[in-house]
Image 1: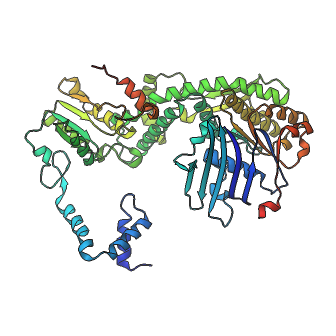
Image 2 (image 1 turned 90 degrees about the vertical axis):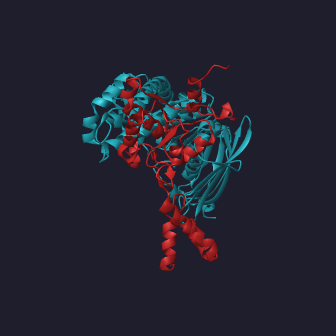
Image 3 (image 1 turned 180 degrees about the vertical axis):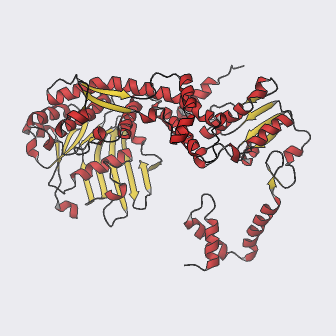
Length: 202
Length: 362
C-alpha cells in the first residue's frame, strides 16, 4: 500500500510499546510532513543515545561513562544498597532527597509467565556485589505487586546466610496509604498493610 | 436496585427495542423467533459483562451491524442511574454509568446481582468442574467480602508457578519456587475454608427451594465440597507444595490446591448426574438458581432473576409453586411462548410484555 521505505518506518514505530499500527501510521505521516530540520533531530537523538548511553558497570543504571553519576559520587553512603526494578525507579527515589546510598537495577521482576527467571535479571550480580562491597543494608524497593514481592522474597532467600551471620540487614519500604488520599477509596490490600505497619504518633 | 426502562439496538434480530420492566414478575410473551431470549441475553450482558450461555458477544450483534447498544434505567434507594454498554464487532466495548466511563462491567455485580436459568443449559450439573467452581466463586464472593481478592492472588501465583514448572530455563531450585509457593500457601487454605463455609451455609437454602418447588422433602439433597487440600494449615501446605515439585514438573502443572476443587451434587448419597433423569436434573438446577436468588434477597441485595422458557419444563403443580415463589421476589423476568401456563390471578399481578415477530424486522 505504501512505498517500502514508508512501510518500514510504520513497522518500526509499531514495535514500540503502546503504539499500534494506526498510531504508527499517523506518526509516520506526521514525520513525513515535517521539514528535515525538525524531523532529523529525532533520528540523531536516537543514534546518539544508542551509541553513547549504556549501563553502569556496577549498578546497571543508565550512564554515558563507565560508572553512573551515583556510583562515581564519593559522598554517597557505600554501606547501603537500594534494589530497584528499572532505572526510572532511581529517578523517583532520587527526587525524594531522602536516600544517600547506592543502587542496584535488576532490569525487571521475576515473572515465569513472561519468561523472566532469575537468570534474566541481575540477581547474581546483586549477590556478588553485596558480598564484595561489604554492604550492610539492602533495601528491596521492587514494586508492591506480586512479581515485585516475589522478587523481594527471592532476594531475601538468596542473602539469608549473610543476614543469619549478622552482617546484613534486608528491608522493604513501608507500604501504606498515599499522602492526600481518602480512606474511603483505599483498596483492602493497601489498607490492611497500612494497618499492619501502623506507627505511634509522636 | 430495580431495572426500569430497557432499550437495545442491534441485538440479534432486534434492530431496536424498548421495554419497561416493573417491580415483581415480568412476563415476556411472543411466538418463537420474536426475540424473547434476546431480551434476557441483552440484560445479562449489560449487567454482568458476560454473554449468557456459551454465546460469543459477537454472535449477539445483529448481522450486518457494527455496534450493539444496551441501556437500562436502574432505580435504587439513592436515585436513578443509566447503565449503558456498547459492544463493537471489532471487540471494543464501552461501559458507562450516567455517562461516566466504567472500566469494568462487574460494577453492577454488587448493586444488581443477576441469576439466570436456561433449561437446556445443564452444564452446571453435567459439565466440567470449572463450571461448578465458578458457581461456588460467585456464591462465596457474595458472602465473604475478601474472597475475590484472595482468589485473584491465588490464581496469579498459581499461573506463575505453573509457568515455572514448564520453563525450559527452570532449574527446579528451591529459591525459584519459594516466592510463589508462599503466596499459594497463604491463600490456598483460606480459599478452601471460605468455599466450604459458603457451601455449608448454602445447602439449607437449596434444600428449602427444592422442597417448595416440588412439594417433596429436599433434606436428602446435598452439595459436597471436594478438595485435595483439606485441613492443611499454611505451613503444611508449603511443605506439600515443596514435596510435590518434582512430580509437578513431570506433569507440568500444580496438582495440589483449590483450583482443582469440585462440588458433588448428591441425593441420599448418590451422584445426581448418575441417578437423576433430565427433568429431575433441571428441577435441581432450578432449585440451585432459586436458592442463590433467595440468599441474595435475604441479604437485601435485590437480585434480578432471568428465567428462559421455564414454564414448559414443569408440570402444572410445579408451575403454580414456582409462580408463588417468584411473586415474593423483587424482580423477575420470565419468557414464555404461551400465557396459558399462567393462572389469571397470577397474570394480574405481573407485567405482560408482548413481542411480535413483525416488530423485530423494523
